[in-house]
Length: 166
Image 1: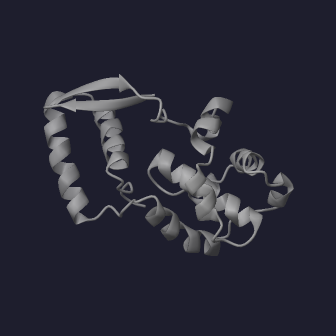
Image 2: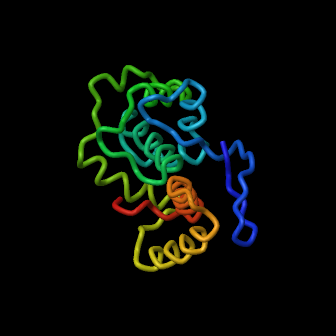
């Protein structure tokens, strides 16, 4: 779990337990699942605007996922285990999720609200210009392309900008 501290053009990794590690959605450990998907009080409050327990759990899932990965989940990225975990920790009956699959309509209605509620904004021309200038500065200090990508993802998440293509 690292956060990057910026000192001029030097980049230094520092420990930060609030920053989730690089995650592979298909191989989350139990502790990563808890770190990423434990709802915050504002997630629960946000979810109350939706009808039905399953839709409320899906709204919480989307908020936690968007916060961890810097973009909303795609329909195939809804993990039953994480949804059940959210149901249990929020005191809901996990059986409400039996046969539940978020419909494209539900996602279309919920995701803009989720993104706005978290303070994210779209990757627009202004965000692209800022990222390009920032990457140019970072590229002078870093030769490793994979590291630059990780730094860029981190910067977008910290600036609350959705990743391009979302």
